[in-house]
Image (cartoon, helix red, strand yellow):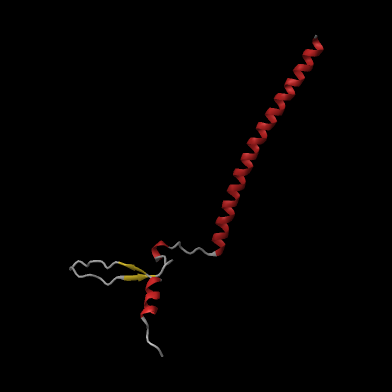
Length: 101
């Protein structure tokens, strides 16, 4: 078996981030902590949700998005129908004016 070389230690060191040591209340210094890249502390991780709850949340989100889309489409549809009815009204008034002359 071979011992660890300086290069192995260097590679290992480059993959870890050092967190500076902190000072204790009595004045002594804590040993620095090595943290691997990509590590997320437990406090910052999202809480686990069972699949049936995740599915329910996704379905509710999809329902809300669908409702918003339908509402938007309805608003656009009423605007279009108002434009159509205005143009129809104008045509009819023009016809009426031409008949009355």
